[in-house]
Length: 462
Image (cartoon, rainbow, N blue to C red):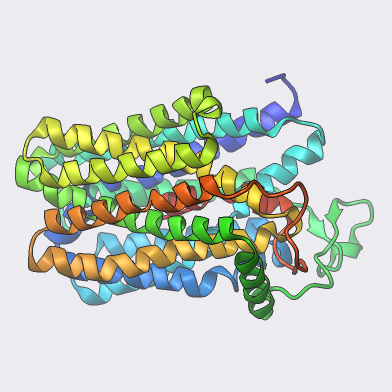
């Protein structure tokens, strides 16, 4: 990557993205243990996940045009504030009311998050150099995020153990210290975003014409935005899905991906607690397992970059094989009682998550014409969260009634079956160059749509 304005922008954005991932990762190794330690059972935790996911499903499309309508910066800042407030509530969680309030704020923040930061970054990058190759810059951002996840998982898992002898006051005592540090880091992320993320005013905004020669960009104009765009987006997405079996099966796989993600992230800590114990004074095993997930994601991403292009059978085969391996690793984690088996199962599951994301997104982008990319990526994200919503309640109830191992085993078996949509896609004829039939509708800009990544969004605003 050559020195210059583009590289400088990428370094700043990578630092911001890495800091955001650090803030996300610090509470994650002990998040469910924190909630169960405050008296919440897995059924209620599953209900909270369902509420959060349903809110994202409801708000994903209506909020999809906000970043283009009012600007990416205010939407990104609002998203971070809602998420920050949700984790403040979670720090003080004591029962169903605060748990559900956390889920509501988290859902709003996640819905607002979709693509705003990525879209701003890509637009700024192209404003500096229209011919800049995007992939090396995005790779640098991904590396920064992986490093943030690694460091955050290690620190967050160790903090309860390191501070156990300090007699910290409630709500910092026990696993709460990791939540508190995560909240402080999220506040720092908000301030950093405020400083780093500069956006020109839009033509037509109040006062935009008052500063001749100042930086402005064209307003969206013409197309419906926000809630008014929903009927058109849904109708267009339905027409496109019905005309393209590839997209239909990719949406099925996306729903299964949401189920796999929420089940693994909800149940791995309670299962590990049956082997290592679940006390804050000895949280080191959770630091090790949390760090293992970060290492696995980084290794999976690097493996796809190095060897993914030449995988036999192409993107569909790689995505299907990854889903099969991921489901098998979840079953292994659910059935093993050894520390080695738990570590191996978790590592393979997260490695397969990373090796599935890129080929899945590649298949989706190839199946969707540029003019329709925004609406279909919004629907794709909606289906992903719908999978989370459908899975969270029943699996949480099953874990509370029987055992979290049983719930994770069921989710693992469903994930194994989710390799079938990719097998079907691999047998479909390749689409011809050009767009799928239909009429494009208004929505987010091409840059915003092209850079939206649903698993990353879900992971980033858990």
